[in-house]
Amino acid sequence: MHTTWMTIVIIISLVLQPSPDIMEKEASHHGYASSSTFNKAIPAFAYLEPLELKVILKTYDEEELIDTKVTKEKVWAMEDFWAQYDGWVVEDQKIGEIVFQRQLERT
Image 1 (cartoon, rainbow, N blue to C red):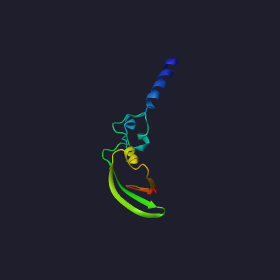
Image 2: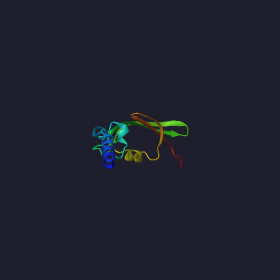
Image 3: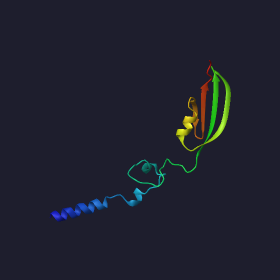
Image 4: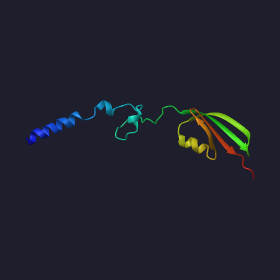
């Protein structure tokens, strides 16, 4: 009787095991991408191409806009991007574009 129960438990546990197809989902399936239990060749957050952003820099003197510069940037690492604009404040942000502002310092 004990052997029969053990056999049933083993069979049930094998049947309830997740399919290998579920474990090997692509990183684009975000439900699986954040799970640390599955190894993937490329994580969901890694890009093979740089992020291209339109960057708008606005300089204000008090309330008056005195300068605007528009550039296109290729961003490989967000840490480097944010470090480059240290001292600037994000005024607006949308997909593919970010607007920074800063106040002119008077001495």
